[in-house]
Length: 84
Image 1 (cartoon, rainbow, N blue to C red):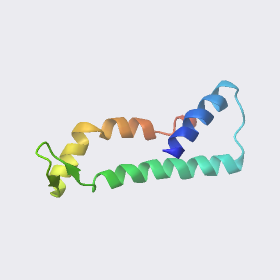
Image 2 (image 1 turned 90 degrees about the vertical axis):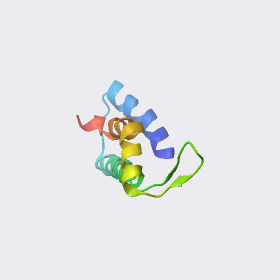
Image 3 (image 1 turned 90 degrees about the horizontal axis):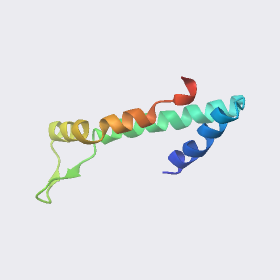
């Protein structure tokens, strides 16, 4: 959550004021982007609670549920827009 807050403040400031990114900030942003991608990967293995209140452990169901519900949002949110 803290990384998302950091990005929500720094990316618009850097883009709006055309601030040159230092090498340290470039590395930090790369680490943050990597962590967002790692979060996507972890979500493919995280169980969830179904409508009946049961924890779903079946990997195929977990993947299907994640792809249907939050994958696209997570993918778009994790794109390093400052590099585009």
